[in-house]
Length: 133
Image (tube, rainbow, N blue to C red; front, top):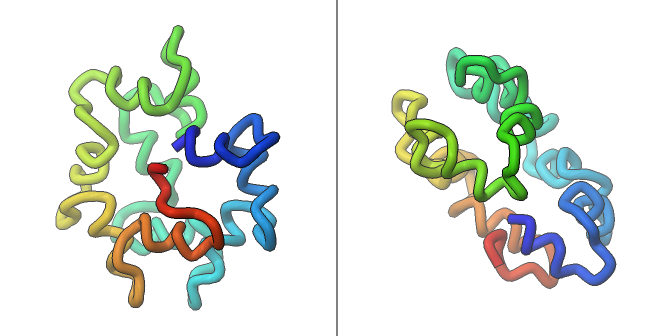
């Protein structure tokens, strides 16, 4: 995920990249282009019983929010590494599949009409092949 954004010349981190893509103010703005979605939090709150994206992550004992989750593990250089070092978590998909009725993260996103998968959403940004790349 970091690699995708850092491939844009002069981009130091993911936050900076979000705001330097032509026509994109911030990550929230990208998501709000989907009709009927106010912001990223709102999208997640459509899953019954979930208040917002932070809340989902705080179900891991001792975690306050998503930022804290990754930064609390000493010696973890990036988000990918952290995902695999949380006890009992194999990968990010596994975390999301703990929500009853959700198979994987791609499936969740494909519930938005007209969206095939998460990669497709991002490929709507001119010049971007897919999120992983």
